[in-house]
Image (tube, rainbow, N blue to C red; front, side):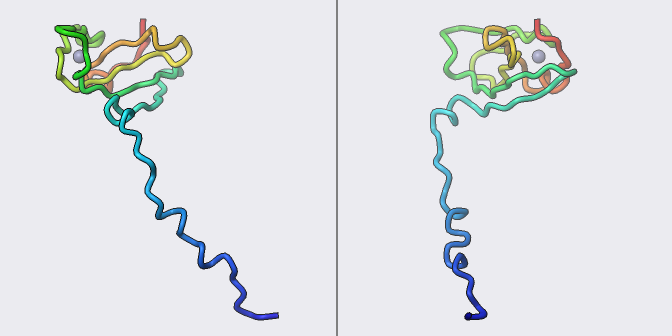
Amino acid sequence: MPRNNRPKRSERGKRQTEPEEIDFSALRMGIRREETRRGVSYTTQTSIGANADDDKAWVCPHCHLQITKGISHIVAWDTVRGVETRRHFHTACWKSFQGPLL
Ligand SMILES: [Zn+2]
């Protein structure tokens, strides 16, 4: 029996160097992730605000100031209750927001 028998060696690293397929629609829509605040799971997504309806502005539930079109911000919703509960936050406001999302 040969001593240096490492059959898998030539294939090592091959899969790891394959570039991940880039989803351009996800890139445009922002990065989606999940966060937990006080035991409640929220789904958040970054938004560059560019695909907003004309002249649409949102009121940030944390500081009660408007988020106008073109401002990068966070869209967050209750993961359990669903996307219907989504609200738009300034990025900094979402970081200090502790819920609940009404
Ligand atoms: Zn705000």
